[in-house]
Image 1 (tube, helix red, strand yellow):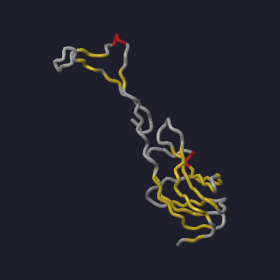
Image 2 (cartoon, one colour):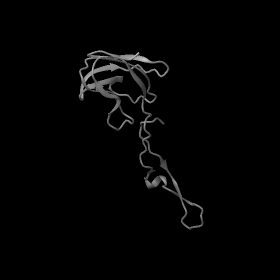
Image 3 (cartoon, rainbow, N blue to C red):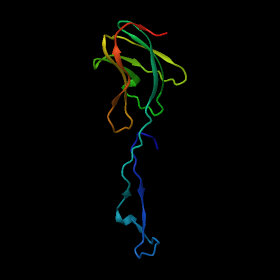
Image 4 (cartoon, rainbow, N blue to C red):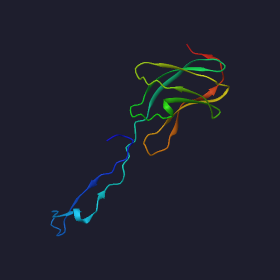
Length: 146
């Protein structure tokens, strides 16, 4: 079994028709042409993990260091970060999965405004993708954090 897939379980019952506490009749029999099954179960995938912090920025870009892990391959969008200014996608950058050491990514084409950096994820195969915000802040341009 894999998280993110859908499953159901079939079963047979032993019926106690004479109410003595012991099941003596198996149901269904093969000739009944009946299959008893559970409700569909969908164990969700483990959500991706990110630890991020900005390091340097200028008027049109911001560099971020991050660690990440995606055990169940829940990240969609070809494994890219999605960068938005005022809810408009302005840049996409490839995610390098590494939970041991910090990776560096430089987000570009930024202007002053409401900045969000997202990933698109899907925690089971039948659901739709949704955005998970990793950074949500106002971008004002030049800033240097040592």
